[in-house]
Image (cartoon, rainbow, N blue to C red):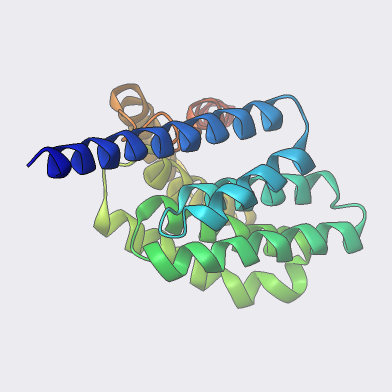
Length: 208
C-alpha cells in the first residue's frame, strides 16, 4: 500500500513539475515576442510544441508571429512569402489536432488573408471564398468568441468597402464584438486574448 501511495505521489509531483515547465516556457516565449525577439520566441515555442504534441497553443503563436512578420515584409515579397509559408506550416500542425477549434480557424483565415494582401490579383478571388467559409464555420461553432465575430465582420467590411457596398451591417457586428471582448474569459493565461484594440480601430473607421 505504501508503495502505491508513493507511486501516486511521485506521479502527481511529476505532473505538477511538467505543467510548471510548460507554463514557464510559454511565459518566457511570450515575453520574448513582446520584446521584439521573434526568432528567439519562435525557437522556444517550437521546443515546447515538440513536447506538447497535442497542445495547439505553441504552434498558434508560431503561426501568429510569422503572420504578423509577413506584413512587415510586404515590400520584400521573398521574405513575406517565407513568413506566410512558415505560418502555414505551424497552422498545418494545429489543423491536425484542433481543426474545429474557433481560434485555430481564425488563425487559418488570417493566414489566407495574408496571402490575399501578398498578391491581391492572384489570391483575392482564389482565397476570399475560403476565408468566408472558415469564418462562417468558426461562427457556427462559437458565435460569442470575440475574435471570431470581429475578424469575420472586419474581413466582410474590407470586401464591402472594396466593392462600394454598405458596411453598416459589418460595423454593427464589430460593435457587438466589443461587448464580447469585455466579457471574454480565456481558458488559460496562454489562450488568445488579442483583438480589442483592432476592433476599436476598425469601428472608428466606420464612423468616418
